[in-house]
Length: 343
Ligand code: NAD
Image (cartoon, rainbow, N blue to C red; front, side):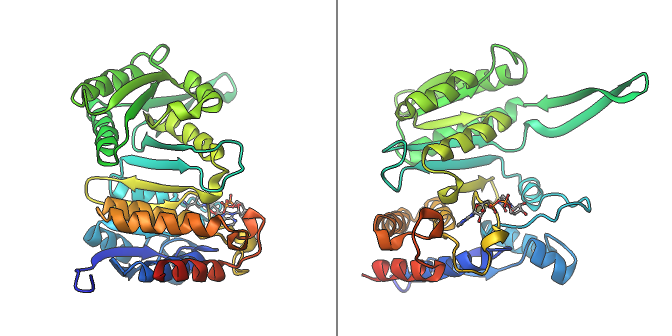
């Protein structure tokens, strides 16, 4: 209703095609009834050029306040020793869960009726970056070493998140993916802890286990057997791109980075500098990230309306952007969506 209080949320236009697709997001959310009060903040190359910082304090402040951000793609400058803004955000807000749903939207692809969700641990594992070389004789890089770190607390947190997510979103099964047969300590701890968490959900969510290599094969042979998959950082990274491939690639894939104090939603694709400013960008992935944010806010009705409208527009030949073989422009795609939502 018109009197409902709006939820404050940070909106980051980003670089390249970011501003064009964020513009569509704003219009579409207006048509949905404006559930959010947007605070527009900068990050990325545009922020660096204007204020000398890829991730300005004002943007961090806004996210600290709202605990909720929708982020356009950011260009990370090559060279110059800049740390990825995405990694900085993950660390600053302890965004321990990365959620990547994959759902068939456009029929006629390699697989029909795919609907699964990968939950990836985002802060531990082999991604903590403790790497070094050991010199032998005159070769300074004779040996390369990396240390992975999994903690019981971190494993419990991500497993709990995955099972809670399954309950909240009426998912039937969670598959724990590991390599505990070889990495007995590192991923054994994760498996053991995830099993303990699973036992608390008996009767509510089915539990299943897979070794990561077998899981990769089965995702190709019979992806329909999976529902929610939970895994450690590196395996989750690889499997999340694999499941995006099952539904037609990264172009339509949304992602969420979730912590206890903040959640940041984004498209999986980058800033696409090759098509920036040409009206060729497909805003679907960022819109679907917006739907994940609505889910996160408990606005399930709005999320469902948004997904249904995106599905309906993409199902028509005249509703396909350039990347999908059509010719509708970014903003005209936004018009089709807002018309549909306004009925
Ligand atoms: P990219 O995803 O930007 O582009 C890859 C290809 O896909 C390009 O041909 C592009 O035109 C196309 N594409 C991507 N999104 C599209 C969309 N919405 N509609 C239509 N076509 C689309 O990957 P890249 O070229 O490797 O990276 C460009 C920049 O983006 C780099 O600076 C990279 O660091 C950054 N990046 C940012 C994020 C993020 O912020 N989450 C993620 C990946 C890459």
